[in-house]
Amino acid sequence: MKPLRILFMGTPDFAVPVLNALIEGPDTVIAVVCQPDRKRGRGKKLLPPPTKVIAQEAKIPVLQPTNIRTDAFLEEVRALTPDLIIVAAYGKILPGNLLNLPPMGTINVHGSLLPKYRGAAPIQWALINGEKETGITIMQMDEGMDTGDILLQATLAITDSDTAGTLFDKMAELGGKTLLEAITLLKQDKLPPVKQEDSLACEAPMLNKEQGHIDWNKPTKELHCLIRGLDPWPSAYGFYEGRRFRFFCPEAVEYDGKEAPGTICRADKHGLLIATGRGALLVHEIQPEGKKRMTVAAWLCGGSLSAGDTFT
Image 1 (cartoon, rainbow, N blue to C red):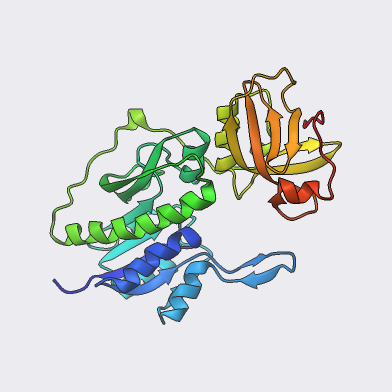
Image 2 (image 1 turned 180 degrees about the vertical axis):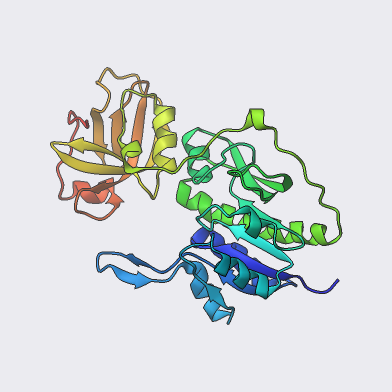
């Protein structure tokens, strides 16, 4: 079979390993569609999406429409004559006329084991909810929110030290490998679609900064998952004397002290041992307001946090 003509749609870092896998694979990436350049950082410098950088290095045409629901964009895609559209974290819901344009349709690389965690933040919510495994789903897209038929899945174990950041990297690599396997099977007509069981579905909505404000009355296990699921963004935090402290690298420990939730039971080179509603949490890294992320040991060399202090 001759190489497929693939139109790739993806924007952030998660999409980069998927795009690289396609570029290195046997098929032809005819163009990359991504979001427009955005201003980022303190200097508000206009920066390209990560996938645009990769595409330009590989001399692949880049399209950055501000609106994908126009007749003009549809005709631009039609003129490229793609056999297949592949989507990985593009950032917008695709209209039906675009999804159905290629002869082989449009498939998506989704960061969960569908039907669980449909939505924008599946990796973070899997961690926040204490899942022991997650994975990649290659899905035939329809106009719903991650409701299309499942083509192929690959599982990945979640460790106690995983964060959203580390899991993103693992999942992105797995996504590229699983996609190439799916395309090979698709060419051989060996990838029958499987309907999702809607009764098992749960949502993974976009996160916001307010979700990171820690309620120390909750059990240690729940807070351990929350901090890891919000690392690196939007991050979990509490306040001491009106100053925000962000928390990273938590460790769940057994503790039967009588301190009120949020109270620092111990502060030393090993970290901050903070009482919770059930047990305690040993936090190894913090980011005081106005400072960079650092180990607790580094902060204690010049900062002031000690046993008895309480986070709100």
